[in-house]
Length: 102
Image (cartoon, rainbow, N blue to C red; front, side, top):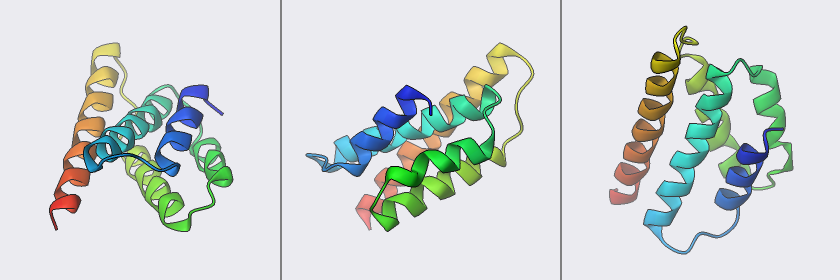
């Protein structure tokens, strides 16, 4: 498993001190998921990395994030890959913040 993704999963699955910290941690995890997707990591490897997460709600959230990342095509150029990664992270951060407002 990607060490950065493992760290991000650990960070989010542990208690986070504030809601804004939660959205930052979630969006960083989204970034790592999309980085893996854009780097050619198999989806099944990313899903397998969730096996250590005990909290079912968090596991489902990350599984949905992985599915969303793999619905976006792998980009051919470095610039487009970087853009896809940034956009995915921003979209996830936005969704997280919106959910906290409800």
